Length: 282
Image (tube, rainbow, N blue to C red; front, side):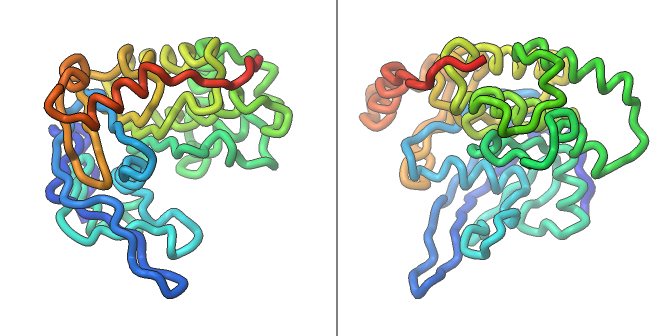
C-alpha cells in the first residue's frame, strides 16, 4: 500500500465519490453522498457548507480516513462508487497499516469532539495522548512550549492542564479538542464545526488558533462551520452540498452571490442571520 506523500498536490482528490451507511434493523442502506468530485490544492483552506443532512459530516469523516472508526457497524461509512485520495493514499483501499500511517498525518475534529474527551485523563494527558500512542521519543520541552503557546492563544490558563473534562465548561472542552487535533502537526486538517459550543467571546480565539497553525505549517484545511466570522477569516474556496450532491463551488466572496441557485442564497442568508445562544464561558 502507498505511504502518504506529504508534498502531494492536490492534497485531496475526490472523483465521482458516493458514500453510504449499511442497511440495518431491516431497513435499507442510506446513501449520504452521491457522485461528488473536486480537488483541494496543497495549502488551500476550503469550507464545506450545506444544511443538516446534506452529507458534509459524512464526507469529512471519510476524507479523514475515519470511515470505520464508529463502534456500531451501522454507523460505518462505505464507499459505493468513485474514489478519493488524501496525500496520495486511496481511501477505498485503506488497509490497517495504511490507516495508521495516514491518520498520523491527517488531523480530524469530529463535531462532538469536545463532548467526547477521555473523562479519566486530565487536559495535559489528553493533549499528549496522540503523540505517546505513536512514539515515546519526542522532545518534551519543545512540545511543552507549543502547548503553552496554543493555550495562550485560546485563553486557557496553564493550570487547566491538570483539570479533567468534567471540570471544564463546554467551550473549554471544545478548545482542548481543537488543540488535540493539531498536536501531531498534521499537514491536512478536517474540522467539523470547530467553534461548536463556544460562546461568541471565545470563538475568535479558535479562529486565531487555526490561523496561527496554518501560518506555521501551511496545512491544507477542510472546515465545516456555520460561523460566518470563521469562514470569512480563513476560507478561500467553498463547496455547497444539498442532499449529498455538490451544487455549488467557488470563491467564498462569489459563491454567496450566485443568484441562479436559490438554495445557495438561502444558505448564505441563514449563515449571516445565525446567532449562537451559548452563554459565556471562561
